[in-house]
Length: 334
Length: 246
Image 1 (cartoon, chains in turn blue, yellow):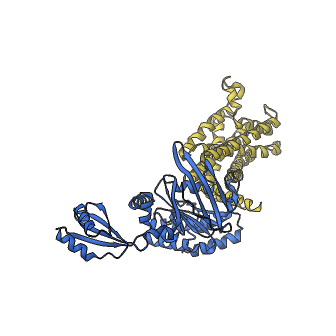
Image 2 (cartoon, helix red, strand yellow):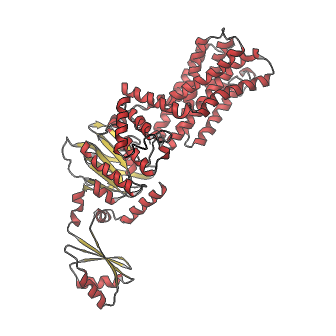
Image 3 (tube, chains in turn red, yellow):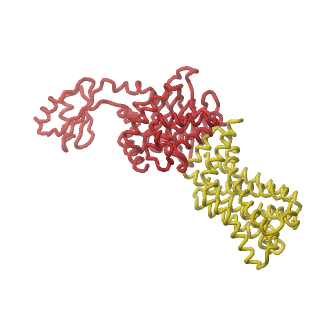
């Protein structure tokens, strides 16, 4: 069963999704997924490819229909009428899908017009957003000629042109350069202050950790854990982690060290690597001496700060590097 | 109420600028009717007196081809590029969105119809033509053709499929609607097929308006085309709901 944490209060509560189920033939894309969003929070949806992230967004925004379950957005029942709340929603899909033949400025103006914004107002807003996203100079150029980072920024600008209460961001920084990704993260982090609630899906655990107030881990269409970032990180708070590289001797080294230091947790990572976890400071010198006595050569020692990645691996059983590989693959395709 | 008309007007303007008013399409709108007129003259070998026989057919074909070609391809293209999702996510009803999306094509089709009429004005005296019938008939043919294009667009998923499927419907329509051969002279097993195409009724109205040679009552022709428009539009909306909003 998906874990629920209590809703803040009725005033702050913006999206309520209850037991959403969606099947594509024999494949269950979503299996009784439940969650809620409070006002002005950044809610992260974290999971590998095919976990059900985009399906969830499509159902919430009206691009897809759930087989069963209930959705309410800002108190409006969207289960049978997905259009009911579309004026409150902004969407940034995983692919930049603006019109290649239009300029950046015209794209923003057109998107604003779809929400009934008048000419003068949409021109003013488009100019504001181009400035905010650092695209002022490129505003008169056709979207087709933009770089990936610029396309992404303009797509996000288009998503907020009508001041939506809720912004759905599907993989906002996938496939773009580091500088643009950093700028986009900065812009996203400022949106809740302006009254926007964000539903963010991402492959990047660090991104989720940095931006989100609460996170849901979704695997194979099921939410396996939902909590605040602070609560999720609680189990690893104060923990020390060290990675030791011992060429081809990880098994022997791990046995030797476990005998000598029973208070520490030693994990065999690979034939070359051991992971040490402890609730207190880990000092390297005793390990070096002991391994040397047993004729084991220590090649490298690396301290690690425990992150959400450790929690993700623990909760989902999915190696974080698999997620990273998927992100890299997607980046390559983009 | 006003908000959705702002959306409507801007979808129409964008489509006109992005697709219909591009130089290749304008030249297509002019060259296509001229090519048909030339072809008919060469085929019959007769003089300008034939214009009255040719005009209904050339108008119909110009509207049909101009409208269906553009709409089927542009909608399929936007769907493929996912920019169509922007429209589906707008807070406007699906019926209204599709109406906005097809209006550009309807307008383009109607303008295409004007080209052969303008050419004919230089060749013959059209003062006896019933313009009060021609104008609504052209608009109705354009609406039916646009909705046919929409139906094609939502049935296929690739741009090349849209072209193929459009031709699969358009060419039988052109050959069986009574333009090239009178329906009465068609083999008996093909005759029923003539009556399942909206163009047959459009051509009949235009014939009646230009030369009084219609074979069915004009009111019935109008009624049948309106029915075709409604059926094609609602079949397209149903298809969008079924295939695109899964």
